[in-house]
Image (cartoon, rainbow, N blue to C red; front, side):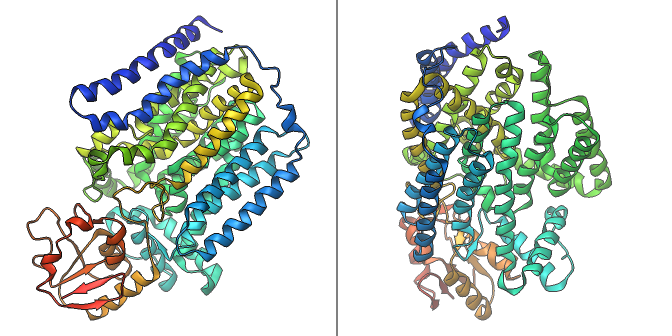
Amino acid sequence: MSRRLVALSVGAMVALPIVAVIGLAVPLWLGLSNLAVLGLYVAIPMVASPLVVRRVGTDRIARHTQLGSLGAVDWRFLSIVFHVILSALVLLVASSEVRPTVFFLGVGALYTTCFLLAVSTDESTSRTIVLYHVAVALLLVIFSVTLNYDFFVGRTDLSTHISMTNFVVETGSTPSQPASYEPFVLWHALAGATSQVFGDWVSPHATMYLLSGLTFGAGVPMMYSFARRVYPNERVGLLSCLLLISVPMYIFYGMYSIPRSITSVLFLGLLLAAVTPPSARTRALTLLFLLGIVVYHPVSIPFVLVILGVLFVAERLLGRRARIVDGFLLASAALVTTTYWLYRAEFLVARIADAIVTSFAGSGGESAPSSVLTAPWVELANYVPYAFLLGFVLLGFLFWLRSTRTHDTTFVAVGVLTVVLIPLVFPGPTLLLDSLVGVNVGRFEHYSFMLVALTGAVGLHQLLRRGGFKAFVVLLLVVSCFSVAAVSNDFVATDNPMVERPFYTYYLTEQERASFEAIDERRAGEIGADRVTCRYLTEVRSSTCTIANAADEDLFAGYDGVVVREGELERRPLQFREYVPESEFPREELNDRHRVYDSGSVSYYA
């Protein structure tokens, strides 16, 4: 192990706890105790990971490294258990109006079974078998939302994409689109053409959900192939897939069928092509993935270039011989980007400028949840899966630095890159504070999930390798808790999260959609409503609606009609220009109006 890596390892072991303590002390000193509470999910892994590394040692390998008692368990038994649980969960979702808590516990059992398959795999267990189980577990989580509830809208942009896909299906041509959505015509054409193949038995928006979910399911074997080429160990490759499907944003974007989601998987494909031995075919594949990212979502490429650039520099500073990012990849990325931007010059000048403002000066459409400041413990509870992921990443990085094995250090630059991106990838206190003042760099998370999964998998593998059977028992419990937290947090389970944040539900019910259509047919004049309602009426119904401004003295003043999602308001705050919970909802403003429509879930006041 080189002196440079030794120094870096010792420095990291000492610096992490110090930075963690400072990160908690500074907010307390400034009187921002809420941010100190949120910082716990970052501080605890930063303190615990060096202690764990010191406890299990550096090169000492446990006598029960192969976990012999698990090797005697036939994979067929674990597969039967998996499918029994899977069948029960499918029946549970089909028979429940809302996914109950026991569903998330069952998914945790599925993930734990996948963990057992990954760590007990041997020559008799095909990697394809494990990858199949991991992919099926992910698809269950995704489709239990998008194909279970009537109309998934996510963060509301999906309403526009669904509307444009509907237009393609109905007319056979692309619609005249707003400038900000003009580059995404290929996605709408693909979704529309696929919907026509399915026929009337699958709606266009359900087709979009299927395409997105299956694309992210395909990311599982791609993740395995990428991990195996970067870190040539079977168990690391399989564990990286398990961590991949546990990243909350990977799950969410598997549901969120928009072009930006697809570019995340395209970037994983790009990295896979980059680590494959160079040939004419891999070079062509590299160009294809680059072109796909640029064409599908032009604004994504700057974030991709930053990640590739940092990895390029890290590899050369560390003197690695086997390099992921070479001159061809960087030159190709710059060439493809420049060519496309020149071709689309007039549009992109305005679009990129607007995107820069949106990314670094806030979009105005999404205000920060009030619990960031008023209920930090609620936010902290939803960050638990990120705490686990951060702990695994730090363990992987520290073990990677302290390893004497050649393949452990060949691609140490990946671990360095992951650690460098932590402030931009994990929703830490700094990022939360930035979001409050209108700064958004969270886009990096879309293109870093594979780095987090790989580095975290190395940490899990090394703990199993060095800690033996005792470490396995502890990790089995940790993985079980982590799995439940990954699928039940409010970022991906707004229907019934373990701990609810003041944020709107990501889907509309059939009754709500029917109510909107009935109201739209009898409306007169200008309508004021919440953000989700207005996006549906304006995009899907091609109607008019104005998002009421909660900052005004009278929320509904000046509107001829008011739409209130009563069912949603009972459980969640409604997002107008700001979030308004039921306790602060101005019912008195509606007393002078006539309630001319009431479906139980939606009311219309004229």
